[in-house]
Structures are given as structure tokens and as C-alpha cells.
Image (cartoon, rainbow, N blue to C red; front, side, top):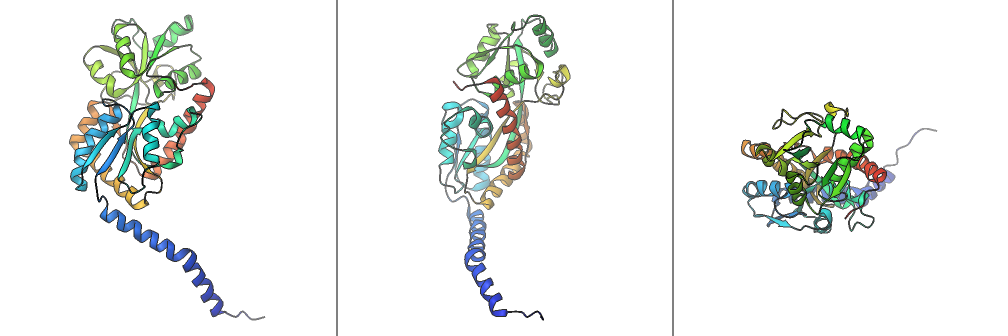
Length: 335
């Protein structure tokens, strides 16, 4: 039987497609493009889910004024500390998805918190990754009075006397705590975890020698190391820090391929148009390439990442799997 073309059926099919998918899709894309061209139309609020003075707050204040000049609108910082950063993350997750409310936070609110908190008020899917601002090594620090010289010394002496070293953290379930647990899992050590209610009190006790060691993010540790108040034994990135080139990595000190990094990222409420997310990503990427901002990153031991939303999301997925396993094996619980 010869093939015949039914033009009327084809037309009806095309019409149905346009009404159900084509036109709404085209309108959505057009609206997104218009939003990106006109955004922002009002003050942009960056929620920092931690108290002033921490890494998230330092980075937010470094970029707020330059971004306000880029965007022609005020950019304000709103500190909302509490519940390990999840309070502020929840606020942003439930905000209007128009790009005017953003989250600048340790990525643990996206990777670790969902594994740690049994009843998290938001889900990671409610926070759209925008850009990874920077990564930080955790630095293994000790009092200047310690006879320890390297991380290899820690491993050797722990093997000889398991549990001999006390290691502070900024709280149960934090990345500083889970880094201790990862070392114990990887090296079969028995480092004794000592949780504190925040990094400040822990640092004070490390300086005074009340505890032996601490893994801590680079920003608060750098000035104390450079000022001679603390000794740096190792860094947890796979390569040495440019600002501490004399300090070996954990990987080269006895635990090959070991890596534990803290990262600071920007998130928007899910549902924010792809075009607006892309614009925010590109503008911030342009900003953090500028020499004055790069110099601020160097001062606190931060490595700029400057990636796309898609690459950031993929990296977050990998980190969530890694830290989820550490939470499960260690049995870590939040404070």
C-alpha cells in the first residue's frame, strides 16, 4: 500500500504540541531571558547562616560592595546563625525564587546536613547551586609548645599509644569533626574528639595547650599561624597551599589520596530562572578574577574555584556521597 501524507492529522498534532508544550516552553524561555536582562530590580540580600567573623561572613563582605556596583542595586548581608547553618539555609530555600535572596554558606548545608539531621526543615533540592566561591584546606594545627613536627609524627605516636591525642572541633557533625573521623577511618587511628560550641573557644584551648590538635578551616587559622601563635603540621588538600608552601599535605605524610576540603558556595532558591542563575554565576566569576579580590582570597588561604552551576552541582553530589559515608560509619550526631 503506498504511503500517504495526512496533512490534516499532521497539523492537528503540531497544534496540540504547541498548545501543550511548545508555546508554554517558549514563553518560559522568553520570560527567563527578560528576567535576566532586567535583574536585579531591587536590593539583593545575601543570607549568611553563621555569625559574623567566620569564613562565610568574610567572603560575603568581600564581594557585597563590588557586586552592588556591578548590579546597580544595594547588596546587603543578613547573618542568620543557628542549627549548624541550617536555619539560614531554610530561610533561603523557602524564599521567593527571583534571585533577590541568595545564600552564601559552607557547602555542608547541602552535602553534610541532609545526612546528619534526621528532620531537616528543607531538602537540598530546594537550593539551586550557583557558584563555588572558594575551597579551603583544613589545617592540622597544634600549640607552638608541641614537640610534634609533622602529621607523620601524629600517626606514629598514636599507633604506639592509641587515643593519646585530643583533637578539638567546632562542634559535633561539623566538617572539622568529620575530618577527624575520616582520619580515624582511613588510618585506623584513635584520635580523641573534643567538641566545642564553636571554633573560637576551640582555637583558644589549642593555643593554650588544653587540647593537642585541631583540624580547622584556613581563614581563622592563617593569621594565628603567620603570627606565630600556632604550629601548622599538615593541610588536607591534595596539593600544598600556596600561602603555606612549607607545610606538607596529609596525603604526602602517610595517608595517600586523603582529601578533606571546606568550600563556600552561593545558592539560590530552587525555581529561580536558569538565566538569572547564569547571570549571577558569570558576574561573580568575573568579580573573583579581579586582582584585589584574589588578594583577599590569598590572605585567608582560599582557593577560588570559578565554576559553572552544573559543575558545582556535580561536585556537590560527589561530596554528599563521601561525607554521607563518614557520617554513617562514625555515627556522628549534631549538637
